[in-house]
Image (cartoon, rainbow, N blue to C red; front, side, top):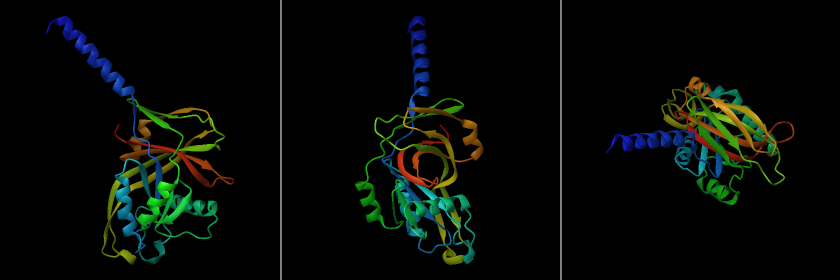
Length: 246
């Protein structure tokens, strides 16, 4: 190979690397499955295991929200947060339910199902329309560009949310209803924060990589979700995920 051809090959390699860096990354699922669970709930381990299976699927974004509603019966959930509990209560208000329960799955912000009922969850996923607003993720060295597509339909306004999660956390439960059990939780949500309001037009925002690094997680996702009157969560419009170590 001549020096000229070597130089051309090097230029091509650098150009290809730059194109790859700027290329869209991540995956866009057809459905979002949120599990509300608790380490103090003896009925929850089968649902936790099932969510682990959904976490392996590319067509589903599975997220685990540990809640603190059972902390009073002998074991304080090590992964729970009041924010997770409030999200579950907000879903109950939005769906006209008087109470919450565990394990509970919410599919696409629309329908709630017992979290261990595989058949019913699958039925709901099949019967609901795929998420229709595209979310593209473009990784750069120090930031992540998030582009939410526009809509030609009369879509309700939505909020773009950043979700930071750990893909796997194993906990040895020492007291309460699950005494002596070791349970693995998948896609455990550590942070959920609003990013920007979407009003139907294409929207682009940059997320600093430093925010994700400081959170010390290995999973990152974005949800586009309608907000009902009063701010309660409504139907999902779009979702995308990416490894936190892009």
